[in-house]
Image 1 (cartoon, helix red, strand yellow):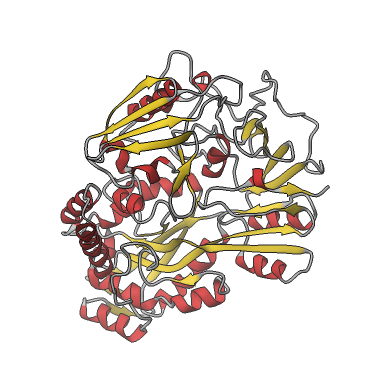
Image 2 (cartoon, helix red, strand yellow):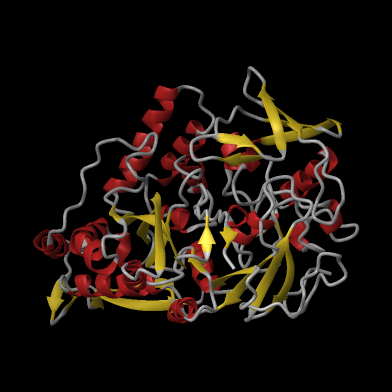
Length: 523
């Protein structure tokens, strides 16, 4: 049966953690996270936490910030027609239980992924895969139906193309969507112990093929409240806070001024935005969506809520990304224009708020209740929209419910974000065609939606750079003009820790890649 989170589930393995270890152990790096890391099925999604999946599992290749580099594959070749990728696998690699890594293990994982292909439909590579072969134990050949220029980038993603040991599969079951027996990978860490609502413990993978951690153990304290996580850092219960929503920006700025703490910021990563549902309630009306664009004071959000720790965003993708410098004209903050748009669309003021045909201009904005940044921004947007007569109800959601709303489209407005490199722009744009994220649902009411999807389907298999750029321009310009997204900031990854405790801190190249094995602890 599948792994259970509520008990110590790997005690039979030789690397099981010492039950007496605690956050005061000087050989243990302690971080905090809002939830448990999950079963760590490499091929599934929530509640599995991506940063932990990356800790435990490797892919064939790794994104290095600009391109891809070898990981489990030491090299590869691509056929002239762009449809066949031949990976030469690294030799003498072992999974964390000591079993051998080879091409059969890779093939078993690809079979598991493709057995659940519909769930993975957001990643275009899944639909491109034709077949695979294993000519020998050190060679894996992937054949595609069409050339696909971002194949290697998608193979480097946190999921689903990560490799689980055959011994981690449920006996006799190839489809990991039904669960796994144990989270056994080739990554730097091994999930050793988990207690629901309290902690997860990882131990160093002594079989790891890369740089092994200099300390033996990492503990993840489960602290749902952001303020409690900061208190835990200040009282030495936690060594490091890193990751989205782990602390308020106010606390980051405050502690960055305290000489006891080191505050680190990455380069800009993903785009934070609000998605507006073009198929539901008043946001079906383009003038309403346009009015919202003009009514929200993004400059104030970045200055007073984000405390200038993120960069203001006026378009869907950061314009520094490839194919994104297309000269879009931003929606300016203009309350009068927002009011004029609503007046012209027949929404008349009746007291503070507007109505049309006796129906109030009332919308819901959904956000993750444990995310302090979401909450503060939602409240500011609520106040901005009230100024133009739009009543905005704030709906704090548990994270699993929040993501289900994104997927099923039961929202008027909802927080949304891109995924940062290497997902952008290719993988994220391709995912817009599938109803597993907020983007498809937000766009579904557009008359241009079929053409947007056809254009995306064509650009991802094109080998003509000018053609690709032209198609990106159409997609991004159309979504901008239709006011489907309210981008407000380009997010940076943030980290806090006490000076003298951690050496060699570095961010990963993906938002969900935490380089714990590269860090050293001072005792």
